[in-house]
Image (cartoon, rainbow, N blue to C red; front, side, top):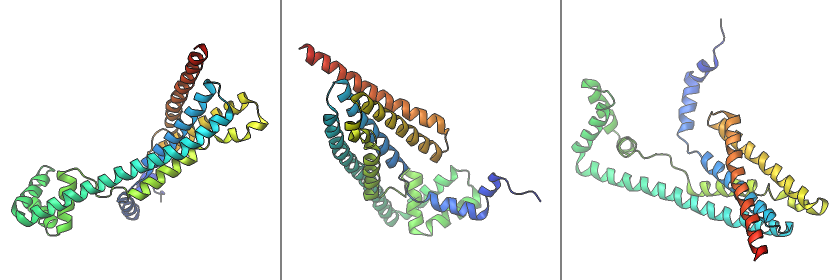
Length: 250
């Protein structure tokens, strides 16, 4: 007897139930990737900018740590407010649909009927679907939220969203700064070079992780993240160099 293929194992009754159950939970992948990439980019941009401007390693370290804490907190607060607004929007439409069902139930049943008719249901099957959906108030409202308004039922929890963003920002943002802590053992050039190498590796790891989770090409996602982050760092370095020349020439 042939052993089941990976595709067949993914479609056993147990695997399907587990996949459907896990998809109902909110995902914080976007918060993690956004926080990690932004933390790495902005912190190394400061390091590159100070290097281009010819400033000391100590200045780069102070500015970098200040950026990690302040910008990380700012980003976390922004994600908290965004996630909270998403939940409040869903709550607003939920209250509205509950009121409509209370006041004009037949009109709301007709909406369900037309929604499922557009999906290909007809005749007795359509009426059964309408009856099943409208027999449970929560299921009825949930269906209206997703089908009529296109709203997600499992939005991110604001506090978790903020915590994941801040943790990812700080963890990734400290990596470009780590070599600066050993500047007394290295030359300035070696310190900034090591910071650049550590940052590039971080970009590759973040991109590779993102590609693996979303089932995209890992090398491509890694190189894409490296390219975007490297471009930001290069711009910061050129700005720093230009400012040094302008100030020095002035």
